[in-house]
Amino acid sequence: MSALDDNWFTEIAQGTGTAFSLRIRRKLADEQTPYQHIEIYETTDFGRLMVIDGCTMVSSRDNFIYHEMMAHPVLYTHAAPRDVLIIGGGDCGTLREVLRHPEVGTAVQVEIDERVTRLAEQFFPELCELNDDPRATLHFGDGIQWLKDAPADSLDVVIVDSTDPIGPAEGLFSHPFYVDCLRALRPGGMVVQQSESPLLHQKILVDMHTTLRGAGFGDVRTLQFPQPIYPSGWWSATVARKDEAVAGLREADAQARPFETRYYSPEIHRAAFVLPPFLQALLAAPS
Amino acid sequence: MSALDDNWFTEIAQGTGTAFSLRIRRKLADEQTPYQHIEIYETTDFGRLMVIDGCTMVSSRDNFIYHEMMAHPVLYTHAAPRDVLIIGGGDCGTLREVLRHPEVGTAVQVEIDERVTRLAEQFFPELCELNDDPRATLHFGDGIQWLKDAPADSLDVVIVDSTDPIGPAEGLFSHPFYVDCLRALRPGGMVVQQSESPLLHQKILVDMHTTLRGAGFGDVRTLQFPQPIYPSGWWSATVARKDEAVAGLREADAQARPFETRYYSPEIHRAAFVLPPFLQALLAAPS
Image (cartoon, rainbow over all chains, first blue to last red):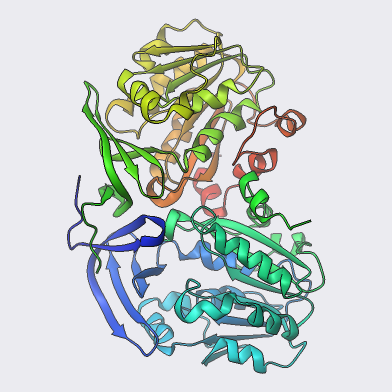
């Protein structure tokens, strides 16, 4: 069996019995912040790589899929997404995709660890290119508290772009957090949250559906997309909507989008919500 | 950085700067055949794993996606798939899916290495459960030669379920092979071939489209699906059709399919053919 030498970064996902490695040229940064351990690598084939607490977060090569799919499906489903909140998302890639939408009036990003954003500005400047947009506010603090303090009926879309539901991000997958989301959202408002691998993390997916429904959301749906650097290479985001069904793609607007996308299109939007039978069965609402 | 100890099997894809590992309990078989090196492992989380020349081939846990997507999209697009040839596919998982279709009258599998099938019978018996079907013929030999000798207009579907286009499988991605395919296919006949990762192997995908068109196929289209144990976790199959467009899903038949699927459905069928903009641009036929 071949062994990986020191020229590789490996994320070992012990809980799933899998590991993924990228070949690296060198380490560009290594910081222990008050919240987590951040590393930046230069890889041989994936551009730059950000790692938090041993888990791959962002690579230059494949982040476009994740960031486009966290932003555009929900923004092209909401009829008029004016006020957007991003919780987490410190690399600013999701924020950039949100700000591409001219219909967005304000985009507030609440990232707990300012160092994630400062390192992204340094090593992933392309993800931060819209940070100076006058519609954007970068706030560094606790997203759970921020949402608790947010006025009722003040937001159209909440994007939860966090790390896995262990450690600091755990509270973002909880009943109280979703109740606060619901309160802060206007009628028809939507939350989208990264929801891990459809193959490896089925309990998390099922629990999210149950918890979002239990908090009072009117509809919950999961979409899927490839994400090569994440465990299994297959990832998901789960969308919940206040009062209404998660439906109503603004087809003409998405088709005429005034910006370039590499993964998203209205056809991909619809395709991403199509789940294979095993996932449909898993996520079927209890009757 | 964490290191992987001897309790892991790692496939290093040097050409792409990536590696994927599964935690193993023990090795169940290790054979050098005249063609290749075959290993079977018991993993902790993915059931059994077959490895050929260091590359993961099949795991108990996720092979259903690959095998269903190699068989059902093409069989539910062809109006009346009676005679099917599988080249490679020695683990018999694709053969099993083909034989689930009552409209299939003959399914010939031509695998060059009999040991792949014998080891599959021993360690993946569920994939071989239809091998005794009277419609099935297991032939061990060179698929390229078999197709060269096949009568003209004798096949409806050719499924090329091979290893990567290096080593023994290289000839399966070539102009002469596709010309032989075309000759052996009846009008409206189709070939489907595994075509690697949409992220990592774009040159192979583009070359396949060019070569299939150059051989005279009327239409060429690529479909995509997750395949967690293959490099990048994102995989593709490319479908080419004699004379006609790759279109015409038999929706009612697929909906009423008389067998269970875990990944395939007519909705997934359509979704799998939807390509993201970057792939559409890459594979657009030269005008």
